[in-house]
Image 1 (tube, rainbow, N blue to C red):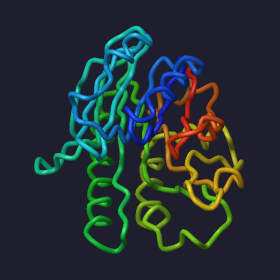
Image 2: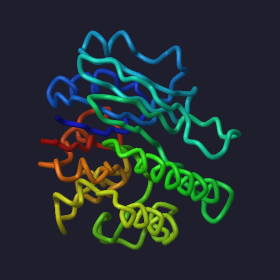
Image 3: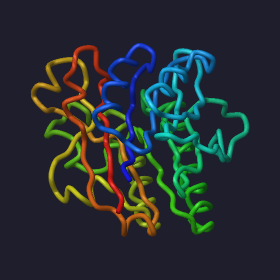
Image 4: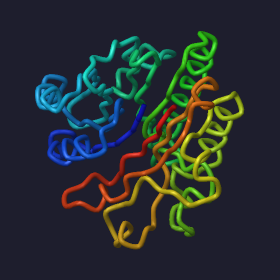
Length: 256
């Protein structure tokens, strides 16, 4: 089984690129982020013609998450991250797919920091950690996939000091990510790639993609019962180089 995560950065604007990637990559499950569309504008029909059922949460111009399943309809189990009923941002959706619980998440960016946006980022991270523990207690296979907006370690960003003040690399979100791993979640891309530098995001400016000056922001965290089935992982880097592409590339894993 192949599971992928892809921040599409506007699903309707980049729908031809998304459909082309689905056709060639053939993921069984794909988690999408930054849909940036009204719920009624989600391209459900086009995706179904491509062979994918979908579940989504979205909002106009911002955020938005989805789960696609090949020749199946995801069974939604949750449409919001618990812990704050006032938070209505479309950043989390969870569904049963192929005998697993799959979550597509889009963690807040947190810039500028310090400030209320960074506070919201850390509060959201804490809520994610609590819910992740709840999922572990259910003893079902779980994948938490998406754009975490955190660079976990120094080898997840090209050698530079230009990002030092950015929320993506601050100690607190890095520590929050590390605590998830300490609680038994497996960072699938890092587990497979070892100490190799591997990136999923390249900004549009200063030829960052062409120079491979990237960051690893997109992660697939696996529960223990899935981590033992992990057979491969990678990034479809070339997708980022296509004309009109998202600034992210799809990351994927395969499970035996």
